[in-house]
Amino acid sequence: MALLGLTRGASWAQLAALLRSLLAEGDVGDAEPQTLGGVPAGDLFALANAIAALLDAPVTIEDRSSRVLAYSGRQDEADRSRIETILGRQVPERYSRQLTDRGIFRDLYRSDQPVYVEPGGDDFFLLPRVAVAVRAGDEILGSIWAAVQGPPNLDRMQALRDAARVVALHMLRIRAGADVERRLRTDLLSTALEGGPGALDALNRLGLADRPVAVLGLALLARPDDPSGVTADAGLATERQRLADALAMHIGAVHPRSAAALVGDVVYGLVPVARGRADGAFRIAADFLDRVGERTPAVAGIGPVAQDVAGLAAARAEADRALRVLRTGNTAGRRVARLADVHVEALLLDLADVVSARGDRPSGAVANLLAYDAKHNTNLVDTLRAWLDAFGDAVAAAAAMYVHPNTFRYRLRRVAEVGPLDLHDPDARFAAMLELRLAARPTE
Image (cartoon, rainbow, N blue to C red; front, side, top):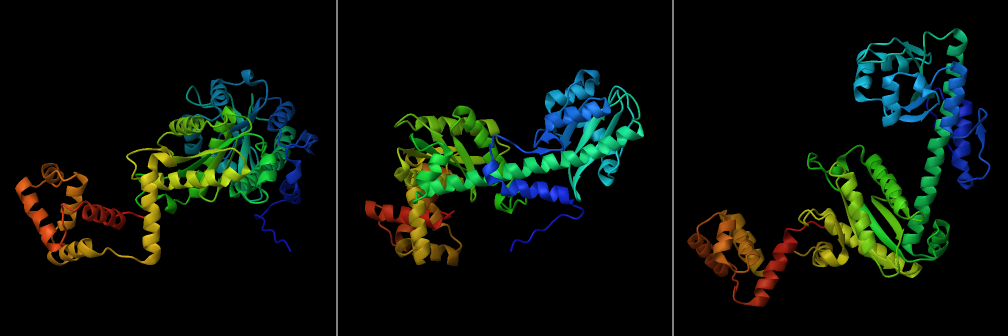
């Protein structure tokens, strides 16, 4: 039994449109799309032209964030602010701020009646506007804006109200259809990456079964201004999906048969490449991260080229291992890497997993030094770590710890005594360095 939860005030027409979209998985790319209100489902531009004809005025259809989803013809009859809005596909911030300050958005979203907006001079609209909210029950989907010459008559106000209901159906259809297509693509890509019995069929449906494919894995990092980490961000799921959509668009421009989807907390991309060439995938990922910039703190792991279905799961595993290293943030600013670039770091993470799973603790000399520091409030462990990092150069290690070289040498002698640790034994040095690295390394 399926139980549906509807937002309060949703109409049966809206429910029917939503259900048709969710159930029409096979309709994605159908040659005969359904119509809503006499307009092909989801064609907001055709709908904007139809509304413009009813109102005898140029029209825009916008989302809740004042982004232009569609616009009609005859925009040259409007004013400078409308032209600026169309060119930027977004209502300029200064106009949005004035609409907010004047209470226009408040009035618009509180009522199902059209709102008439008087012109306001050079810094505002030169022509009046009439707008109506587009709703699905209590949810505000967006709004319709018409640049008019004066207050519309009652018939045109009623036509605008009726148009808002039709636009709501189309916006629901677009949103649900996009969700269906996204979910289908995610399922196909996930099945292909798992490499099971359904992988070949999934690759066939993605159009990638007949060529070598490179695997990209992208993940978000914690923001520098978010001390709690990105995992605590309430909008994390939205940000990940936005990253997935952006990657799909980017790699689709590089190769039309590419595919990208969010699987778990990682955005994966499959990119057809020339046989044996993985450097192209590296450049694609680097270019993409350069474009999204620092506002979207993300990193990318690149897997090897999978020559067939059997190699796809292994390529995904290598991309995941490289990505895991990058997500620790201990890679000196590196944002893109193959496993070969960070292999030692990946091995240390694997070893840290084994140590954690078995519950192992530092032993021998390192354990003695940790206990001594805790009891006597000394820093013998830091001294040993600095000396090992400096390849035995006591002067450089002393500078790193901001102490005099003679002081550092005294502490180093105490390390050898308390450990006890033979600093001349290469095996003892390697064991101490490994234990110190594992003790300070997070597993994620």
